[in-house]
Image (cartoon, rainbow, N blue to C red; front, side, top):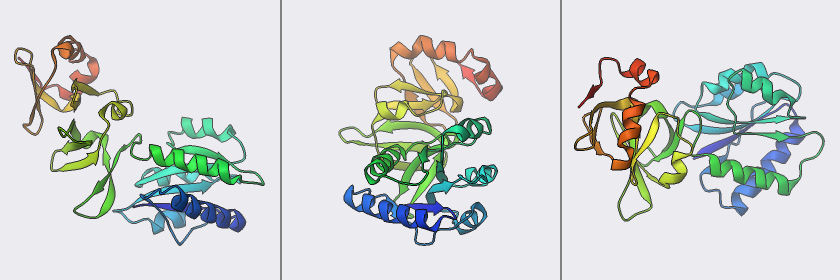
Length: 251
């Protein structure tokens, strides 16, 4: 479960958001969201309450300032929604490197329908963030955030709507729309074929004759002919030279 935490000193707003959130979760069947019972009134308390193996959707009220503390939340496994009176703070947060799921405007009133639409949209975007991919760990019965840098490749499971995210030490099964996922991945992920996406920074050997990529863990992945020229060009980029200096061997 992703636990919804509301951080505000405004008790009336906190109650309204709790009631609205609980209602939307039920009415729209947002089955991966759960409203956290204890709602802190400051960032320090919010961080103290967060458990290492859980993921949170945090609504943080910054109408009276305090957004300087947001970096503390960015270090945690949480997705952040900022509540403010206007969008003026958005540029400051962006310049400070603070990543958010969105901005919820609030002055004196909060329209239920608008909030419902907002929460549903946030919910739809939850599996992806600038940090990684949110997946459900069936073994531990919790949601975990897999950093993009930990992912070697992603591939579909033939004949199903599911796929596998392959990391160095384990694999995660998720419901997968490869085309949709590709839109949210960093620049160094590239489609290798219709059923696979590869983290090109983890490629240690590339065979252009048989069209085979060898990953850092020893796994191999074939790639389509149409990507041959693209991969040739990518491996000439300075970014790859820097990341893969002595590890890359082009056949």
